[in-house]
Length: 409
Image (tube, rainbow, N blue to C red; front, top):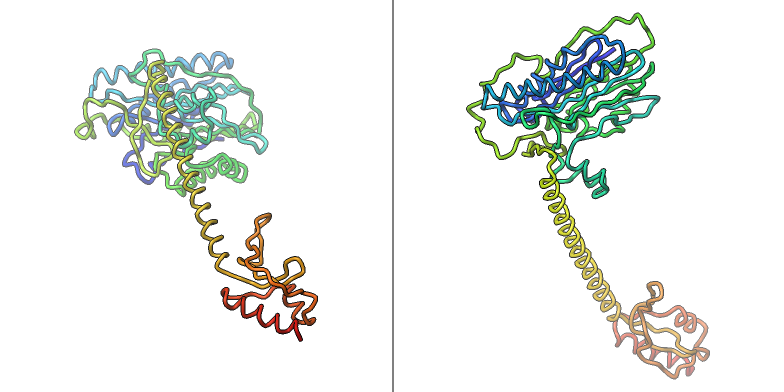
């Protein structure tokens, strides 16, 4: 059982995603290259790779065929650019899988993702071919920092006219009845958390309903990018009918190379990619895995880290200064108050307030008297022992005068 859904999102004007569910093959492609390139790239790649949708004798045969299909799609994209120069720089991610009995064959390039939902747990199977993922893998930044990194949209590997022999990740994994496989573009994975995805996967038995809910969840989060979802449920019914092949997204529409050419510059310094965490599209680009480019980006990341550290220290310094000023002002305010109390068995005038803050005393003896606390009548003595507040120094002196008179009676 399988399902495929693709949506343009709430901001993009065209859908550059493509998806395919077949009898044995399932894939998602996320195109890049602006108005006239992304949709073409993902559609061409998807339709070419879909030709590999057939039954294979072994998982190894399927792995070779799937990898070969991606390489062939890459060559076809290069040929298309040669014939249509206005498409220069177009490319696409591809994440696909083929089921061979109780095994799943995976081929992947780019930042679309393959997940496995098994026994209530969601696991990301594919690895993002992005610059920030390279930094995470090398320990230079954390996954949390990668989510807000300004270079988070830089892809290091794609299919297109940029690399004649792209490196494609392939693997063979076991699968079992009850497993649910999810392939999606980053329009889902960048805006819907893993916990939300897992919750929908576990609570929605039918693949089509689950796919629809996942897309709606992305729309609920604003869906600034195209979003495409392909789901495959592994069942234990050997007689279950095979799904009818279905294309979604740009691959389901007729190819058109010229509709948007007038709006696209012929020479782009960089490619336009989908953003990962922005609320509206912003430009980013693809760069092949060159050491010079990686070094430059790493140095830029270090400069950003230094700027963040300086900004953080400045904010801490300002906060500390504000706290110190507040403490000084508060202490000065306490010293405008007076009260009458006991000091070494005699009545005394204190400056400050009766309360203390931890070990910090907020009052001190301002003036001692010769009035012995024992000479005071019981009521006055208790009042002094619990302290008598005064609005000012003159009022405190008046209180002392009355106590002196009482002690002589």
